[in-house]
Amino acid sequence: MNAAVSNDPIDHLLKATSARLPGPAGAREDILAELRDGLVEAAEANKQKGMRHGEAVQLALRQFGDAKTLAAAFWPEMAAAQARRVVLALFATGPIVAALWASAARSRGSGSESGLFDGGQAHVAAVLLVVAAIGCGTWTIVASGRVVQWPQITPQMLLLGAAATGGIAVVADLAVLSMLAVPLAGFPGPLHQLALGAAMLASSTRLIFSSRASWSCLTMTTSATSADRPA
Image (cartoon, rainbow, N blue to C red; front, side, top):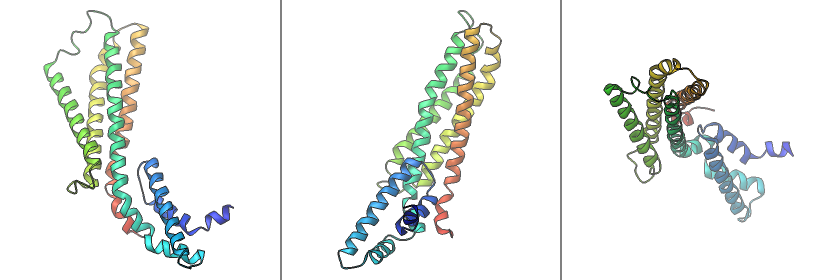
């Protein structure tokens, strides 16, 4: 059974195409399933013309093209899916991280809020970071749904938009950790320390995720040419 599957020319083509498609696994599996259905239908249509099974399959493979060609055709769709996934994840985690830091600040007790959030420059910087992240991320999400209808926007632009959103998140988390962690750590109380620990863990986790996600988007912008390289 395994030998039969491994010797299937369609499986070989799908495996080679999958290796050339970076990005979310779910989107890649959907593409491969669609591609498999198309190859099977083409092979069946060739068999109805009087060809033997092997000849029908080989003709279907030639009609669709090799893995390099198929990966290049589907790469824009994978790039859009990757950009959307990164931005949506950052949008989902942003309010959670902010709420945890607000909870840590409130857990210090009444009358202890002065000194942390009084700086006008800090407020301006925070607002600018939030506006930049929301604007960049929203553009990426909207544009990623219009790659076909809006040809001026390339898949590389979408990936760079997602990477920029992740970079802004990195700056924001670094700023919060450097500006609030030490002052808040000076207040006693187990509940406060627990709240502060949760906030620091959330920011640190998102910092790692944002860094890796941004880097993956940047590296994926160069992978479009991989379809032109030998396997």
